[in-house]
Length: 420
Image (tube, rainbow, N blue to C red; front, side, top):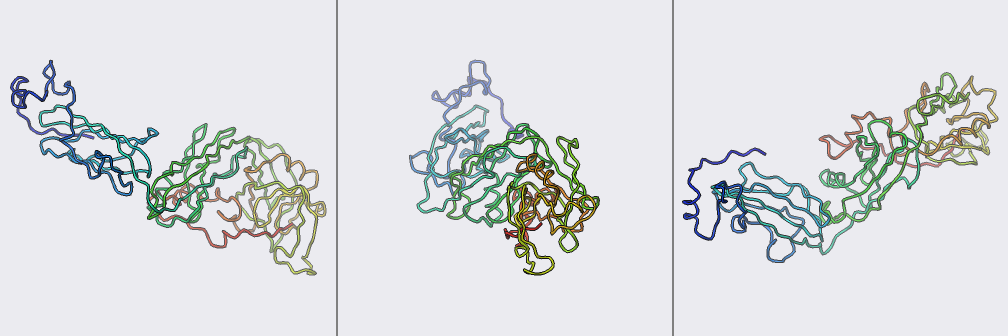
């Protein structure tokens, strides 16, 4: 911050000491005011809170520090909590007032260090501590990070589930600032509000291979909204493995499996036939299920119709909650590599399905191209997060001046149907 000092009359150190009185030392032995020992600035500043009389300070109100003396100014203010974390603040251009721009936490202890300067440039200093009060009645906003700790593919988003809805954009900004995600190697990323209680975090591109990702919250004790305060959150640590991507071309009926950018296997497949087309776009492996019983009735096919089925399915790798899998389909081996005959899943031989089942883990990327199906839902039916451009992803942040993308209500329905 720049500051233009007031016009001052230069006087000798001896005359200045006489003018100020024997009790004040404005100059050091070398005659330069800035090298003097700071004087007690208690009389030069005032607070809008009872920080110096032992009373609890209300964290719901901003902390303001004002320079009392029109001939002096505040030059610097630092406020730290009991853990040593700094509270952000703003000092006016003329040094007349400072106020915090990030909220104080309830039930915490803070240390304030104020530096001042009088009209002759002599430095002043005041250090004091105060405690913030706890609200009598409050609702805690707890956070649960996901997925569970473990190793995942590079497409796995980090999730944050809130214990209560947060609707107001300003309150969302408070929450979002407090939710931290760090990775080694470091990459840039951001949160996206899926709905009032759910956030997803992803980088601009996929995570680096063999990365360590940590998520934690600084929300505890922070006021989020009226009668809503930040609660507990268990930190999360996950790691990534190799970059495994399975790209299925529905037009050529072939799946290409890549590992760290190189093709490691080409698999003949069949995808959804007309009326049951497989979703285009990027999906993420959700789970691996050795055996699944799939029924046509689960996706609205009437029992006894020509499309009806009830089949035992093995080596089923789930990519949507509504029942899209990559799985063994021994009944369609004659069409694999040449025609699309499934009800939406990606089918392959039992041997290839077993290989794929063993080769992938949750978080690995499964992409479908050249299908006549709809694009994978961004949210609510698995992890379609990567189908949003980075620009549209950032629009879902409460810290960006834009309206968050809200999900289609239908996207939030976690259906159980299973297709083959």
